[in-house]
Length: 134
Image (cartoon, rainbow, N blue to C red; front, side, top):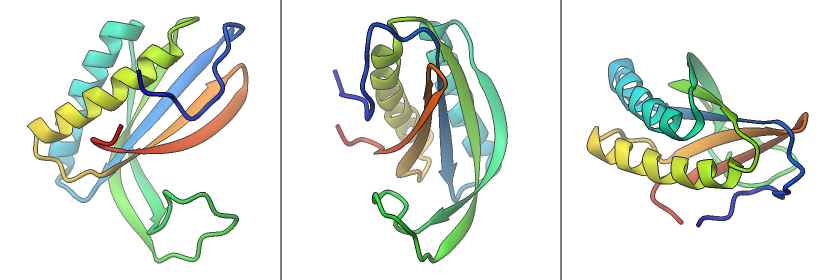
């Protein structure tokens, strides 16, 4: 199982995982991929919320830095928000990495990085993962 970028504890009372898929592609392709990701995630979590978004990202956003200089780029995307059942956060995070890689490949979506925000008991943690990397 892939280790998520957060400390997991059995004392998690409430967790919400938000994943944003951003790429330079036709919005219809992004929607199709995210809908499939959401359907497959809902089979694990019970449901998901979808939202169209426009993101502003630094070229080196995947690096952990104090400050980013750019260049910055506006990109279309969709966001999935999933309420996670107690004790299922690690499982869902690992499954989302696999599901996302499979669906982006199936729809030939040129996404490379996925941004996640994880709210654990009211504490929000941001992380990125590269599609297809373990």
